[in-house]
Amino acid sequence: MRKILSALVLALGLAAAPMAAHASPVTYDLTLVNIFGNVAGGTGSFTVDDNPNFLADAFFQNGSAGSDLTDLSLTIGGNTFTLADSESPASVFFFLGSVSSINYDGALGNGFFKITLDSAGLGYVYTNILGGQGSAGLILATPSTAATPEPSSLLLFGTGALGIVAFGARKFVA
Image (cartoon, rainbow, N blue to C red):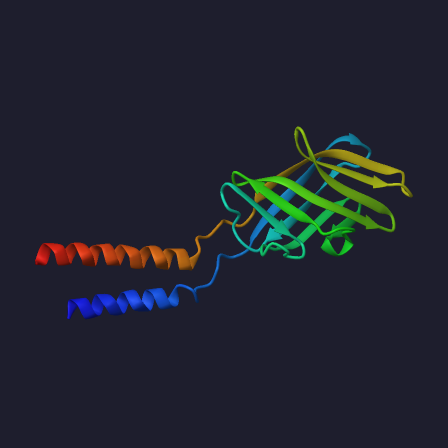
């Protein structure tokens, strides 16, 4: 009876693991710190559809690699730039669990925004030629939503632990 029950629990766990939902999206808040220029800086955020891997991961606006950059918004100099304003597909790269690069080129009728990787960290350049405004500085990125473990990983770990317990109990009973 115990063998049948253990096999049933294991079979249900393995059948449900692929159907379990993936981790929830993660949003990062951005603070644009002006180093030079006549615009004070700004704020923003971006959202990726999954937790970044610890070593290295990439998220793209069009999801070409399977991981999506689902939202990006930057406000500076009275202008708000979004993914819809991007002149080329935006992307975000992570290394060792931290944001290492944000690639975004945006344009509005009265301003341009470019994010590049700077040797001192993430950097940005904002230019509003018509308004005579400009700013360049650093970007600070911090996660605003806590990363949650994937339910399928927890389920897989749990069924594996049950299997080890069942195997150990069988060994000691016999």
